[in-house]
Length: 276
Ligand code: ATR
Image (cartoon, rainbow, N blue to C red; front, side):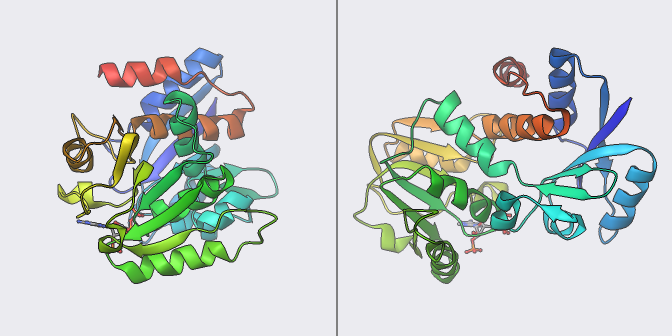
């Protein structure tokens, strides 16, 4: 049976084994998928051992996405743009590194939530790895405006400038970078939280009035009930709220499709996860 796994540290609470088991059952693919605890500082050795034992592919999560980027011998353009790899596929002659996070985010927002981004005003909060990974796919949807805002504004300005340098034949929209306070007076149709603030039980400190009527507040994090960001967005008048569970399932489906050549139906899997 073909072996796959998710590698991270910590990894015990990962939902990926359950998601991929549901995908495999639904598509009648004979495979196993486990959770692999990667010792810190020993990513390559752990992956080497998994491959030697017959592993065909890995999902990669915190804190190893940069290690996976370095481990790959070939990378997809979206992995290059993200500067991080969350999916490895082991072939006979190469290790392909991909990044399916941004595609998962986009699919959750535009397909599952039915919220088109083209021509909309989009605000991306954060300037770390999660924000970087979603910038190119967001730009390719051609929003009217894409603002990257971060607690430390310099990081957002630098990240936006990097993507603004892409040729305009490839990406028509130039992202803008700023700090949270600089957002005062602006309004957005979609606000995406790519900060890790929720991990510390905090919400980004944003000015009031950001949410246009009917706007979507989307948190890449998820948990029981509203995340701190979603609770704040609700209080500030966001029209719709969504957490990142759909993104998790969609990025997994994209990895599964890369490995197996068949795209699972995500709706019943997301429903099963929501049910507990
Ligand atoms: P990730 O890979 O999850 O993006 P990261 O690269 O460590 O993690 O980036 C964390 C992001 O969350 C950063 O944008 C960070 O802001 P700073 O650059 O100012 O540190 C943001 N962040 C973390 N805690 C935050 C908080 N309490 N409020 C606002 N932003 C926060």
